[in-house]
Image (cartoon, rainbow, N blue to C red; front, side, top):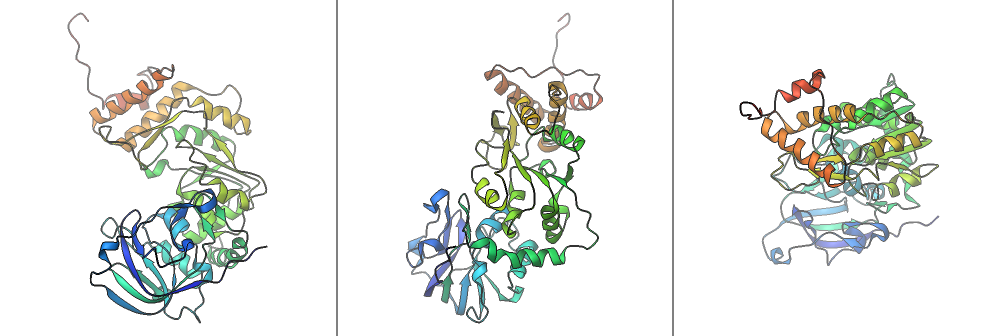
Amino acid sequence: MSEPSPPTLVSDLPVLPYTRHWVGGPAIDRIPVHGRIRSGAGKTRLLDTFPEDVLDAPRARLPGRYLYGGPLYHHFGHVLVDAIIRLWAYDPAIHTDGVIFPLVLANARPAHPDYFFEICRSFGIARDRIRIIDTPTTVEAVHFAEPGSVLGSGPEPWYPERLRRVEADFLDRAPADLKTHERLFFGRRHLHSGSLMGEGYFAARLARRGFHAIQPERYPLAAQIRLLKAAREIVFTEGSAVHLAEVTAALSAERVTILLRRPGGDIPLRPHLDPRLRRPTDVIGRQSGLFRIHHDPERRAGPNSLSYMVDPSAVYDDLVRLGYAEPGGFDLHDFVRAERIEQAECVGADPRRLATHIAQVAQERLKHGLATPDLSERRPALARLRSLLPRRKTTKGA
C-alpha cells in the first residue's frame, strides 16, 4: 500500500480568510499543489484563487508551528470534505502550536459549528489548539500534509487505516442505550432547503420494507456514526448526510443506495462510498428527469433550491428493481398529493408563490409529454392546500 509523502513546511506564509468561494486562503504560489482546493477524478481541477493585490496590505503575525487544516466553512458537507482531510497528520510534538483553518464567508453565518470541534477532537486536536484565521495573517511555519481524501476522487489507499482511531473514538462516545436499525433512510424533507419534492412518498414505501427514517441533525455526531456503522442497508437522499462516511474506515452495510435530487449528483459521492463497501453504491432516479425551482420562482435556481422529478414513476421502478417496492404499485395521484404537501411546507404560505410553483412543475412535465393529474377536492390534504391558492375568477355562466 502506498504511503503519503512527508508534509511540506512553508515559512512566513500569508493566509487570508476566504471572502467567497474560493478566493483567499494560503498564498497559492507558496504551497504544494496538494495544499490547494481540488476536486474530481484525478484531483486536477483547482478551485481556489489568491488575490495578489492584498499581499502588501497590513497583516497580523501568528508565531508558532502549525498544521494546515483547510478552509472552515459552516456547512456540514464542506467540513467533512474540505476541513478535516489533512488532520490525520497532526502531531503535537511537531505542530506545537496547533492547526490553522482559514475562515470562509465570515459574515454569512456562525463560523464555529460544534460538530467541527467534535471531529477535531477525534483526530486528537483539542479546542485550544485550533486557530481560525479570520483576518489577513502571516503564519510563521505551516506544514501541508497530503489530503487523505478529495471530493469526487475519494480516499487515498492509505487513508482508511488512519481513520480507524477516529472511527473508534466516535463509537466509544456513542450512547450505550442507542437503538440501532438494520435499514436506515437518511432523507432531506425536514431541511426544506435543497429538498426533493415528493420524497415522502418514497420514504413511505421504504418504511413498509422496514426502513427507519432518521433526521441526522437530531442526534449527536457520535450517535449518527454508530447508527451508520450498524445498518445493513442504507438509502440516502443525495446530499451532505452521505459525507458522514468520511470519518469511517469502512461501512458494514451490504447495500447503500443514493436517491438523486440533482442530475449526476451521485458522481462526486460514489468514489467516497464505494471504497468503504463490499459492493458498488446503487443509484435511483437517473431516469426521473430532475429539475430545480427556487423557493421564490422568480429567482434563478441554485444548490439549495427545490428539486422535482418529471417522471416520479422512474424512481418507483428503481425501488422495484432493488426489491424495495412491489411492481405496479405506483400511484401518480398519491405522489402528486405528497409533492404538493411538501411544496407548501417548503415554499411557505404565500398562495401566489405556491400556485406559481405548482404551475411551473406541471409545465415542465408537459414539455416531456407527461400530464400532472387534477387531484380531487375530496382528498382532505389537498383540499387544505387548495384553500391556500388564489381563487379563480369566473364569469357568470362560465
